[in-house]
Every structure is written in C-alpha cells, then in structure tokens.
Amino acid sequence: MTNLKEMTNEEFLIHMINHSSTGGLMQLFILEGAAKYAEAVLKEDGGVTVANLISPEAWRRCAEEYLDRVDEKYHPKAVKAEDVLPEGSFERRD
Image 1 (tube, helix red, strand yellow):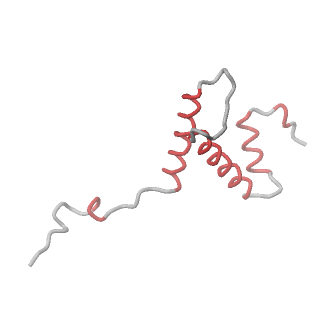
Image 2 (cartoon, rainbow, N blue to C red):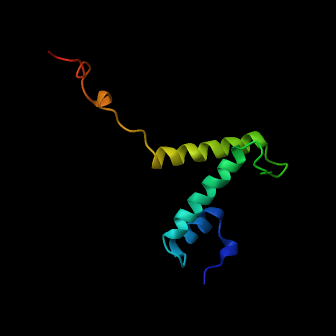
Image 3 (cartoon, one colour):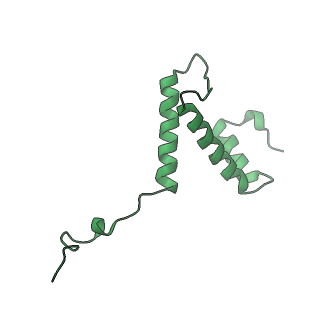
C-alpha cells in the first residue's frame, strides 16, 4: 500500500484522482469542493478563516484565480460569428 503520509500535496491529489475507489467521480468531487471553497472565501460573510501566516487578501486572490481558471476551462466564451468572419460580413446587402 502507498504511504500517504510521505506524499507531497501534489502527489496526494494525483493519487486520489487516479486510485480512488469511486473512480473518476473523485476528480469531480475535488474540483467541485475547491470551487465551493473559493466561492466561500470570496463572500464577505463566508466564515472562512485562514492561519495568521496567510493574508486574507492573498487568500482571496487564490480563490479568484482558481475560479477564473475553472471558468476559462469549463465555460469558455462563445465564439461570435463577427469574431471570425471578415469585417463587413454582417452588412445588409440589398
């Protein structure tokens, strides 16, 4: 059996994703949990506290960055036709 206590945080996350008894569901669980926590950090009354070693502003920046990257990956902006067609393509031609 793998010694979890000797793993780095990165190794532990990869292990949980790749070797969970729930399979790929664990990956979704971790991503969703991180998103919910980030949302709570950004709420003024979220009740999330951090150790005195971490500034609340830095913690909020982490939350913002995480949510921005999740949004970029899973909710890309829709491509508009005017973004890909030559300028003037939408002018009415009678």
